[in-house]
Length: 228
Image (cartoon, rainbow, N blue to C red; front, side, top):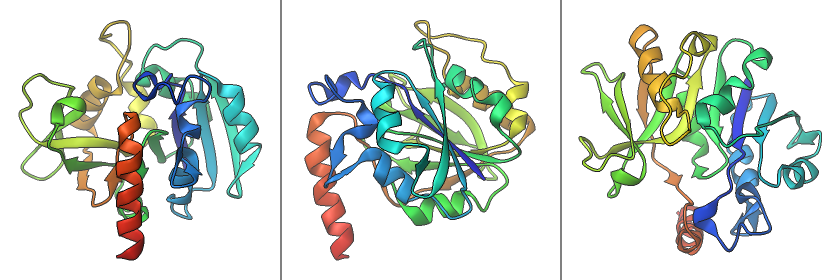
């Protein structure tokens, strides 16, 4: 199984930590975010596709041609034109079902494994600040009904944590509606889910890293998980 990891962003909210380092290489508890992410992948993942952009050469140097025993292919996103466009750059490399995630946050290994047990799935979690994320609305059967990117008035406290199990059918739904020049995967997913149901799987361990103060909070959380 392949895993696409989006690692092209500038990480502006994490400045000054990202002034001279890409966000995926920022360290939390002595490990880079990329280390945390790839360590949590299930053994079924045997190939990585990393989409790079800002300071991408540093990511390539750090991960090399093999990272945690998995071969790596790098794809350059030259324009900051959105997550959907980033995924489309990988279209010709992907075969069948694949895992998709961002190089931003820390996830529980068991949660990712549960997601991969479904044909198509996305991880989600309740949040006290849903307006910072993509809000998820479920159908009665627990599949994805609607996603709203960073709404001013959230219809739900359930938010996408950015981990998804997709398949090649996603590419039947071209990105259509840019927001401030960026094409988000959100609107593509909504159309995709109408024809190919996507299970919404609630996640237990998600540690988002958006701002410098999130790092110390994450380290305390990781210490607690290790003790527990």
